[in-house]
Length: 239
Ligand code: NAP
Image (cartoon, rainbow, N blue to C red; front, side, top):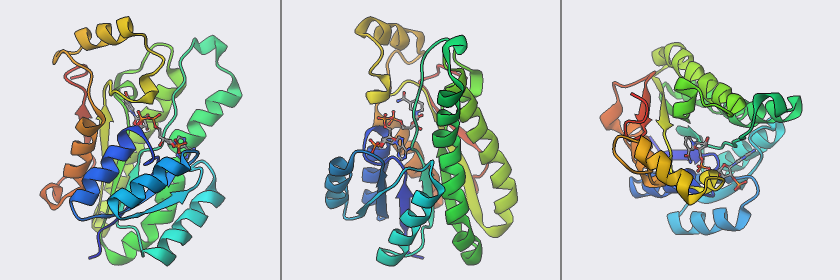
């Protein structure tokens, strides 16, 4: 079977490392981006794949994205729902619009991409879906209610789809990172980063490659009997 992967939000951060490691394992990778076109094109050239633009929150964009991938590469056999946005602030200051935006991107994006990817996987009785959750979806984060809700939703979706799609030969898992050094952590001051590292039993903040290695494993045949699991990559922050 052709190893064709789509990584949403592949242009930066954790997604970029996922694209690199998958390419090294022989996957042809479609690198999705929303705003970082130049970075996605550069990464696609580096990894031998293609860059595909599109806002995952938009069903029309996702449909167009899958059409482009189908016409240039074929049918997606591995979907990594990585695209995500965060929001930090008091719940009482959170607007309904922003709440909906987080739901639309983090959870709706995975919904749209799963809807587009699953029919071909079912037809082939083979496929793999990996959702990038967060430890805050497991335990909840103060001042990140909307974000925590979306990640908890992804965890629920992972478990439900694993049961629904297992009989069709499709595995569905999640990687649940802790604090990982990307632009998403840019709002933290050096002192706050140090405090987060100290709070982590392994005494450090993770790198994008730490989360990407977990994806690489779950995508591989070595994980062929693993589905419905939430693999924490958090240095022991949440156990
Ligand atoms: P990041 O550096 O901010 O990168 C976010 C990526 O998501 C970018 O490639 C961005 O694409 C893409 N994206 C955002 N909105 C999008 C949309 N509407 N449609 C398509 N792509 C979109 O974040 P990161 O830290 O790598 O996070 C990646 C995933 O890991 C997220 O789901 C995040 O919640 C999760 N996570 C991160 C951490 C952490 O500590 N960093 C911890 C736990 C979980 P463009 O640049 O092209 O717009």
